Length: 230
Image 1 (spheres, rainbow, N blue to C red):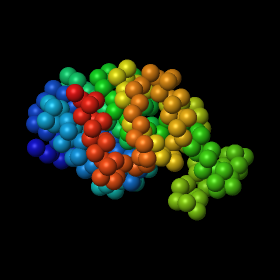
Image 2: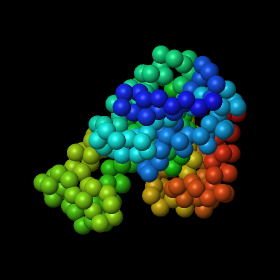
Image 3: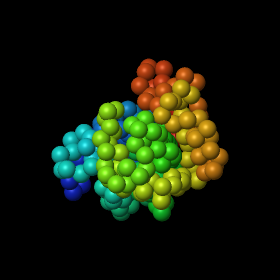
Image 4: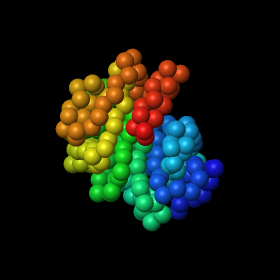
């Protein structure tokens, strides 16, 4: 069963038959809500529904919102309020930057279980790395506020300040993390520190990339999800 609807201006899809349990699926950069169909094939037979939304600037979004914390986090919290009145049990499956947004949006929520795939866990370090790659120092970014780069990302002073003021923390005691051993986006030391500080369970796929997309990587992802839901 698949049902699509609008939650305000946000396109939403729900997979699965009626249930008291729901997974909120939060995609990563360049993703879309339909990616949840693959996870639903794992979760729905185990008694869960899966609800996913298109993040700003992704999928069917045409409302002018941007993929920035002050737009994304309130939307995720709105989705949380929607499911909070309809389900007894709420869990989260989030990928890459979707995990980072989730850690801020759901920090005070009662979440039963959390699965993070290639989570971005140190946004300030990532932004500073992009600044270095673009040859932009802190003083210039503060002065100009936003600076486009040759590699497609726009550096933002407000975004950097938000990230520095709001370090990422796991919000659920039952949190499992899947990480690719060849991830060039998030250093292994960064993920190890996050897992240790937040008492998460870590699964590392040797040779796995930040984006799990090959047949072998997707098989490892399915196995990780199935084990977490067992």
